[in-house]
Image (cartoon, rainbow, N blue to C red; front, side, top):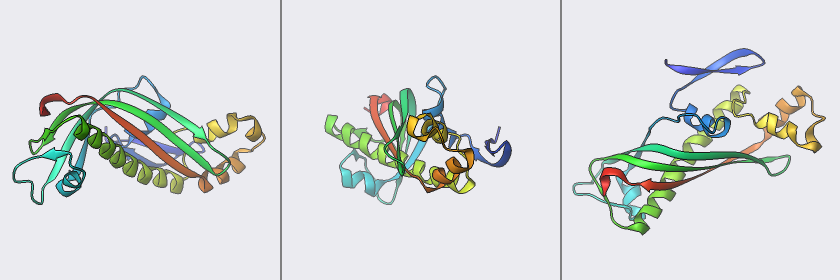
Length: 182
C-alpha cells in the first residue's frame, strides 16, 4: 500500500503517504495503530537544547524512532477564525542513530519538547496541503458544524470557512520508555 486517498465531494483529489496518516489518526480514531515514526533531527539542534551526548556528532543527523503507546486528540474550535488541534502522545523510544544517551530527566523533558516541535512543524505542512486541496480528512468541518452557532452553515459556506481558518497544531509528547538508549 503506497498511500491513502484524499477526497473532496466524493471525488479523489490526491493521496498522502501512510506515514502522514499518523497525524490524521490522532484526531479520527482513538484506537488506531499509529505505527512507528522516525524523525530526523540535526545534531546541532539537539546540542543547542542540551539533550544528547554522543561522540563524533559533527555534521550528523540523528534518527529517532518512536513507538506511540497511548494518544488522544481533540479538535478545539476557539472562534470562527482559529481551530486548535490538541494532541498528547506517550511514546517509547525504540532507537536513536547514531547511538546516543539521554543524560537525565531534564534532558528527557527537553527531548520531549523538541520532538513535539518537530511533530508540530511536520503537521503544519500537512495541514497546509490539505487546505490547498480543500479536503478535510480530520473532520474539522464536522466539528465546527456540530457547534450550535454554526449549525446553519451550508456545505459551501463551511468549505469557504475551512480554507480561511487558522489551524494550529499543538502536539505534546511524553517519553514513557526511553528504550535501549539509557
